[in-house]
Image (cartoon, rainbow, N blue to C red; front, side):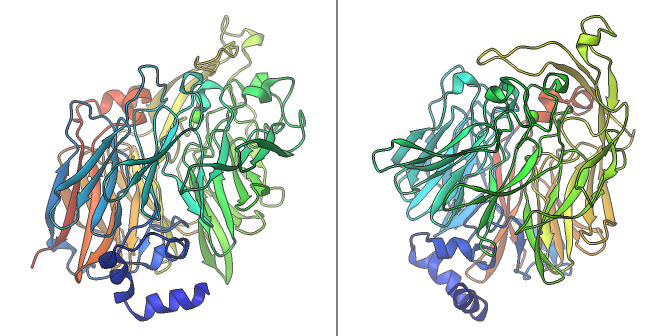
Length: 582
Ligand code: CA
């Protein structure tokens, strides 16, 4: 069935355009073919697999120098801050979220505003890392997004009117939502943010038409999963793992493992993949053990919410190496794998069906906490003194021993999504080179309070650059090329059949590089820092590229010495659309 549908799409570029023109409701089969539909951008990741690859080649290495603005749209308002959103394109409209839980529908023809929804936020919201939002999901006639006070809002695509709204959890306990929701097999899958406040990470499935819960799967070992009957009553659906097997005492009750970046879904395996954040608190001496399923990739059966496999990137994480990064599925040697550029500095390749580790290698220059990943056991080879010291040993008064660790906790890669090109067979990874002084302190859980037990200062490693866009070969572990950037990279990447790689910089540029060589072919100054991923689509025979501009995110808030280096960058909030000059 799926093959026939894809075949049709490949045979005629007009099929996708017919959807766009006809205003058809977004269906499950459309979403499963989204990565091939060049007339729309129906999901985060430009297809739920997250490859961010477009088969479009009208804009290519020969002509990208003629790329020029078609229109720009301002998010307006006094409130700007970080704009990390990926726009969606469907039925003549762009749907784009903005800081402070706003969403706009914009006319694709000319950039005119069609409607705006501004979520009313309470005073006490607790987003850890700026008031960002990364995008929405489309299903049927709805556009659905998560808010900073941990609600889900579904709006009518044509009018912007609320169709349903559901509270996911208690913002006063530290829950929030910043990721784009994922639609898989007709279910709405969402995670939660809040790993710095001792929340319990989970994945929930809902009916996207109504918001009703279908199942819930906690990501901390020991918690009960649930499914829901027609009246919304919770029915036990199996404990996640074995209580107290990988967590001591009661710490699993506030164990973190937030699913703050959302997930990917591969129709080829039928599995959804969610990365999980740090175990809470950061002070690892309080929780000896692996602390499952924190800092892991977790593969879920979409229908039942059962864990099919998990792979832990950083067992007993002591550095806030959230394993929340996207797991991007791809074909290699006739098999289906997933690639993940983990915050901890290693790039992992796992079998997408079984989770078995196929390859793991560094994609940044300095990693202090481990010397490598054992491909037989799948476990890191920890360095002896890489972990911040135990505060109960009192080497520095109430503090434990300070260590210099790399990568810094903001990660070798953070929220900015990478891209994969089936054309070059390379991943394009927005990496950062930085380290941190980190120490542990005593801490106890208090609802709504920061639950770290750690202090830190981030420092650059090199004088001339922090960011580096790297072309990574998942098979050999080799870096094919790199392009350095003075400021830390914080926007995502897109690659196209035109042989191009697009990415943004905090310095304000959207750039296009040759995907084979990394040679810069084009750049445009957007007026504020770019910390969001670009998209592309075709309408009326013309290929367009869009990116959101607006500096912010975690770096200015948490970047320590690095934040001081980039404090001259100006905030903003707009979306830019480009096409080739005639
Ligand atoms: Ca974290």
